[in-house]
Image 1: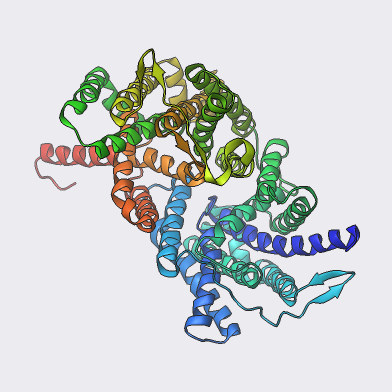
Image 2: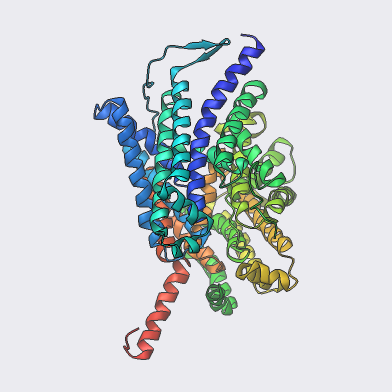
Length: 294
Length: 331
């Protein structure tokens, strides 16, 4: 394989990973916009998506498409419970306290996942076969196409939801100004609940579509979501176009870096980029300069 | 915020009394305790106390959270190990070199993110921690890679070598005591008052002429240096270090200790380090329960006692006393 084909191959696998980072970054953004917090449970949404799908499919023998839907629904409910339980019950609404509550919940859920499923990696079959497709000399698996298709579908759905439906517009109103939204008769708590539920669903979808490529285990979500977080920062925290752009750029840079420079430090690239963005342009690629200096 | 600093003052007023009690405990415990295992646990508490007391200055007084202290702790440990064993540096000056080097790195991580409003330090330190951990694993010809770095010589003063748990108890706790004294003095000094003002309202502090970036960066660097010191002591005490001890889960653990103990209370930090170290020792038999217990405790304390366990309970007690004083009147 020549260098050009190799680079093309890296870009394809980078875009696949990038799509997952983008979904996770969107999940981070939705909660950030509604509440202002960084939700560390995002990692467990991704993990639980993959693991529950594995259980539904391999243990309960439910057909793959239904397992996919069931798992999405289950994690959506878990997302809602996170908000309805600890986050809403918290006595202090200080951002930093809420952020650490999510860290606490995240540890609890990760520990529980370890207890239920053990430490091993679980395989999930591809959604439609393993027949390699060759494009310009690069090998593409059908699962790669599923990742792209589902990600694009989710993005279109979100676009429609936030700009064409009343509930979506209400959520945007809450993120613009919570008090004003509440005065306009919007159920702010309901919107926050919905934002956690949606992030849960998004994380689960991300975790499930990547699982056939990389398998799934009780802590797969941790790295994926930390990188998704880096992607959100890179794109401009809170900006949804930025999240998608940040995810894809990060995925491709990481894949090229690992392939052409050194695969040893593959996981370090994303965080190096995170630090560089924070130091050089903290508002990210498409941010509105929210990261104001005191 | 006034309530919180008010409480830390309550605990600070009897500063000298508490310090004397702690000093006596440190001297007397070895007279009564003979079990080797207990010494190991107490030494780990001492090491954690050093990290947590420093981190508490940052969280409780600087109002900022770091998820990168495991990296600073690890830098102390690895610098001590590599410099003394591979390059034959003398151990004591190496500890100072490690602290200074860690401080410089912390400055470069902290300064850019502390200039920004909001919680950028959390993100920057989190990323930094992961990068440092990856380097510990991947630079295996220098660090020993995932299997760790073994054969680190114990510290010694003259003919006294700190080569068992008992001797290390005195060494580690002497440093822990010193760190507590330094922190208490810092809190009750001009710098401490400036930090409290920053925690209260950064804008107000700024208008009063307090250079907020400057103070926050300083306290961040100081807390990183505390962690580095503790890391060096850890390396010389256990003689073996591996990257797993310095991943970002340890960063979360130490932040949990600060929060459970009570942000802004030095004694609370000491208490948090003790409680959670003992808890994780008890749960050590089943490591999987450890994560659940940590997570659940952190969640419960933050949801119901956001001021921390010690301070929260103290407040409940005060409320009770007030109720009793009012004479059973409702509310």
